Image 1 (cartoon, rainbow, N blue to C red):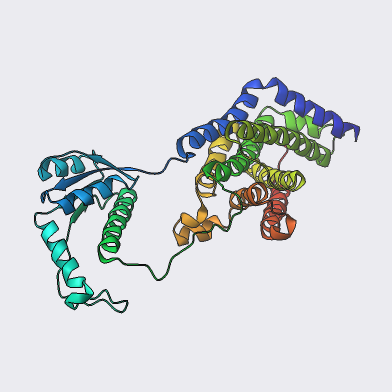
Image 2 (image 1 turned 180 degrees about the vertical axis):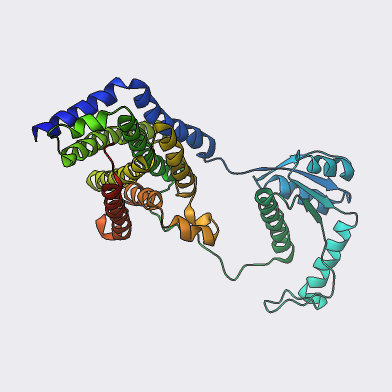
Length: 383
């Protein structure tokens, strides 16, 4: 017990003296959180620069242009010629060009007249029958840009529908009331912060353990420990305790920075959150010991750790939802420990989930921890 306490204290002193390591292991996740938080976490609605070319110059076309200007989505730019607007669209200076062709007002008037009940038209409350041709406008956009294309279609369709309803006095028979299954209003930063904490746990333990143990083996530190009365279990237990202490402190610092800067909250139990910090630390430490056993030098341990950690960082649901990935990638990602650690921490922080609803994540992380520890115990070498 005395050896365990002394080793734990020695390891914590090593962490404290290595200020460069402390700064970068804390700075790295905070840097990511700040960059992604400030860039993507905003409540501003998406907007699109658009040009509306009026070739009809009628009262109806002017009303349509006014409707486009009132969408709140389209920032209308003035262009006299269609060719100039299309040139701007090709150079990404515009996201949308709408052309109101000559004769638009006449076609709209004739269609509305044919739709009147007195003229045998369709606005009778039953299925619409209209022998006239509806007025048509042209919408030109960049189909290669899926985001702006979707926004352009939605904006123009919305304006066209509003004109039709107003002209034909159409009253919708069915309306949709939008509701969210989440009682809280969550933003991207609420999604990001738990993932950043999970990424920090993975990076500190997988990369940190692999590099440190490989370095100690190369410098003969492990061999000198083996020649003493020190038991391997005391050495490993001291490593675990010291790294759990470091990870716990760093996780609290990151969460406090996120709360102070972005207003995020921990809606669930801090005890549940700490539990997943512990099993996440143990799982990734065990993987780090496996890498340290396979690597002959610190120079080879770091690339091996990077090969494992980088794909997990970008595919494990840290920055983007896993469900948005292709299905064949999701099957692979759902096997990774980082995916379940980030999901569990996100559920605790954002939805206030408890152990009862997170048993799947708990079992998978414990499975990773047990299997990796067994492999590490078999492959670990003092020399």
